[in-house]
Image (cartoon, rainbow, N blue to C red; front, side, top):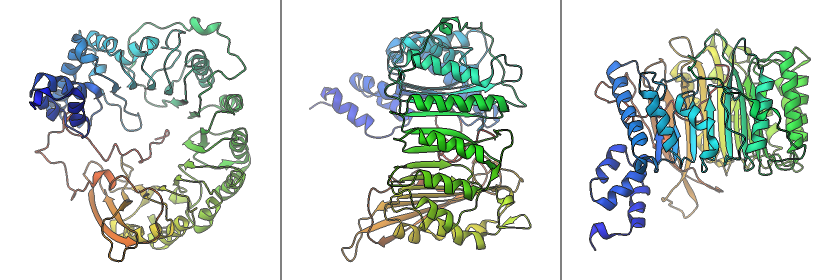
Length: 567
């Protein structure tokens, strides 16, 4: 059979069954006409404009030229734009605001960007920072009949919002800036967006609203006419639930004033009560300082309103509820774990970036009462307030056994574990982390369903600050093994270790494995950390082309590294 006569479905399987670089897909498109159609589908299916801006003029210019050529093709040819399903230029402010080509203000570029947005009518997923392309899509959202997943950061819904027509959205995450001098305060922004989605998003399954105060820096504002909110002013929302598929709700804020916090908290209580029959997951704000009794009561009140709750995320912010009675992290966790203990509740996923306590077996035993827990992401108290600091240096010889004791006290149901050691003003030496990297055999033999475990040490590097990745980290993965000498079930335990003493340098990443036998249960990890990534360290390689789209910063993009609103 001639290659060109193969069914299109077979060619699609050849292309889509593996990951291919843009250069490889471009070469495939030259094989034959039919192969060209299939390769084009893959080449333009997922557009990601995020890149690692390096301050290198040649590299950044090359990136800008390539991105502009791409958007020009999408704007000019509908047979190309019809292939685009996902579009991303989202880069959280905490990581760094990257000015990609969609924010280019040169004459003619904005028109190309807007036309590209109009042509991508088959989008299913999009993640945007503020730019003309994002505004075009948001203002005309109902015309994108397949767009179900939308992430927005950088402008307020009061500034740009779609017409009051039904949309296909299922997941929406909107991070709205709070600027000094805004006429509309954070509660107004949250209330307005909630009104909009209840009016126009009947299929919505997940809604996250983050209100981020910009403090000292202001992003350059785009010149554009203001959009009136009059179209929603007279909308009346039924007290009965209208979002019948809603499963997740999150409302977090930073640096809100006391009166605003009280109003936002009341809004959260009202909303989760309204959707108590369908909601299974919530994200709530918690102060990075002292926990108060009022905060504890608020969180437990939200949880009590949700009988089907399976996932709880407490997002660390700089909010403060105007004083109140302070309680210890231990007291907070005792109350919370008791209120959500099995068998009455079935919490499967829990995240808290700073639990206001050091890791210890006693803390681990608190979570042992959650018999359904599968995923745990937890950070300890800032090390400067903990018990394991000696003259500014974290004493891992004393702390590491406590961390191990915490892990092995956790419930047997656990499958994924991500721990953060917080130490902004604390330093360590690389050898201090050695013992933390020896846990694999003990933790996987005791927690028989566990397949993934990370421990990240966010402590000061040699530049006396925190970078975009932790100073040191270890990544444990349990994978299937084909080797067994006794017929007993065996697993391959992989350990990847990362040490990064200097900002701007590439960390040293090593990996090793061991095969162990035991009574393991459940699924294994999909792969070694970052596909087996390793690096001997050192400064950037001058022979590497860092321009878009060929080079990806795997380390900075690792999703389990923390991204705090307050950083």
